Length: 315
Image (spheres, rainbow, N blue to C red):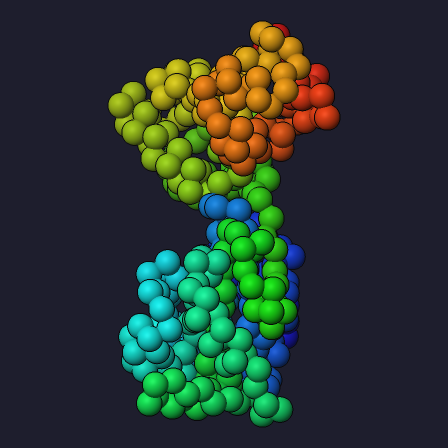
């Protein structure tokens, strides 16, 4: 089977073309050699890393039955320590079994589990290894076991673990891709012009989960109005009802913009005092999205609105 055919297996996933091409290449290699790299998917929240991991796993099929290998999804925040990992996960699911394991939010892995994984992810030329812990012994055969790691916080991962993985950084969804996601969730509803990509998608913060929630709101709105057509007038009505701000901003983000619009450039400590917030809350939370939108500028002298930020108050 060719790589192109493998790529078709991801047709139900919108966007992430570069990641899908790379994963398709790995699938093609797996079908020929029964080995596949251990993948690390990094992505902002709501950009489909878990869905992509599931589709990747679904395409790792048993050579004789052509059925997908069993799949186990682990929320790493629930792993207490190495003892619980060995007893509750490795002993139960990974003891000489064919399986694909997703370590979701792997930046939450306990340190002792990370150290154990470093040992496992150093196989011999036959893609095999052994692991021993507290009376347990495991023969690790990476022709049978595949690890997938996923996180929104790659900077918090142990560098030696990242070095053992094939890192794939996912992209945020474009407005057109978010419009496609909305459309998929709104079967039977038609739309006026390009309101999905031009007006609605920009409020979703690049997030597919937000698109799914918005689709539900639109369905409910259309049902309440007894119509299957969603217009620009309907969007303005829904936006007013749900208090949706430009670019999907939160009220506190808008308040920061309003403060800079009113007072001009402010040093961080002055801005924090006016906002009645800590400096770290502003730096690590509120201003991140505003900088991404090019609405504020951070300089040595302080924070100020950009031309785009000023333009927001002229609309």
